[in-house]
Structure formats: C-alpha cells, structure tokens
Image 1 (cartoon, helix red, strand yellow):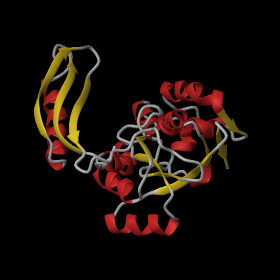
Image 2 (image 1 turned 90 degrees about the horizontal axis):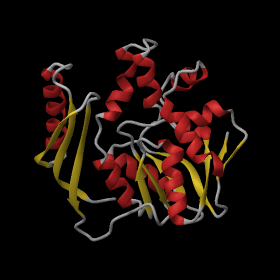
Image 3 (image 1 turned 60 degrees about the vertical axis):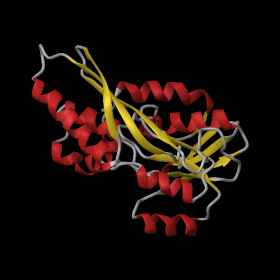
Image 4 (image 1 turned 30 degrees about the horizontal axis):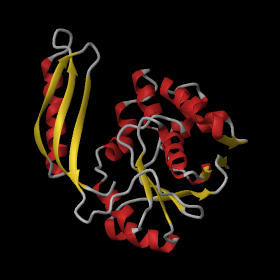
Length: 250
C-alpha cells in the first residue's frame, strides 16, 4: 500500500508433541531477523497447539504522506508491472516430491528472503494507482482482484512474465500444488486465452513471499531508470484494458 510498517504480532500454530521445539525456535529466529531488517518491533502474539505448523505476522504501519494505494484505481492504458518471478509453489511441491534438490531453489529462496520495501518505493515513485502483492492467489488471482475492484480488464503477455527456471517444465510433468488448480478455477470464468492450460496454471501458482503487482502510466524508460536507482528488478507484463476480461496472450 506504500506505507511504512512499524509493529507486528506473531500468530503461530505448532505441535510440540510431534515436532522438535528447535524448529519453532528457527522459525522465530528467521522472523526476528526479517523484522529487524524491516525496522519493525515485535510486540507479542499468540501461539496455539496445531497439528499443521503455521506462522504469520499481523503488521501495523503508517502512511506518512497520506497517499496509500489499494486494489481500486487501475485505469485503462496503464502498464502492469511485477517485481518478483512466479512459480515458487511448483518448486516447493517438486522439492517435497524429491524431484528437485535444495540447491535448485537458491534463486527462489533469495527472492523470498527479499523484503518488498524497495518494491514499495518503486511503486510510489512510478505513481502507481493500484497495487497488490502476489501471494496465495497467484498472479492471475491477484490481478483479477485489481480488475474487479477497479472495474477494468487486463492483457497479460506470457512471454513477458518472469518465472523460475524449471517451473514450467515441472508443470508439464504434472507437478504443481492443488492451490494452482483452485486459483485457475477461481479466475477461468473471466479468462480469455488460447494458451495451453499448463501455462495458465503457472500464472495461477500460489506464491510464497512474492513481489508487488501494480499499475502505472510510467514509460518503459522511467521504469528502467527507477529500477536502476533502487537496485531492484521489475517486469512490464501487460496493460489494463476497458473490456472486463483478463486476456492472456503468448
């Protein structure tokens, strides 16, 4: 939203009868490291007994200039920009199934460890009018949320979307998380595309610690200049349209 995080509460689900408490300790250590990097104070939180481990943060922040960005605000003719590749869900699924090694995830892990603070600055400098992160609903799901709130449509060019090495090949081999199918089912009613469904599944892949997806009138040159100043990557993957469909092109 273009705001500055200040404090956080941790929400943890953990079963210490089945899992070593050392796992919990490492999760909290990683969270503390990232909160410190983001200059956020952990105020406390809640821990519950849960068979499936869970961890999350409820974060509170401020918007000093009063200008925050939401889903609603995308306009026809704007570019659609994304700041991290997609496909983490596929890679993690493949790792669990023994089809990838830990070292195969290095690029994805590096991106997942990268905060979105510089991406937020990029979004504000480019005067974005609509923004979301790309997480559990996948690129198409989160783009749909922007389009629905803004009452617009979008064109996405598959060849311009950044995705992790091996992700598409794994999907073609039938390796993808259930969430990718659920996300695809969520958006297919407004999709318009002649692409193979496997490519659309990649764009529906649930992302862990993804980047920002935003809309802007900025030119390609302005985007390039700002990404160089902030030392961040960003890709223009499409544009906002008037017709209320999401068209995915090659």
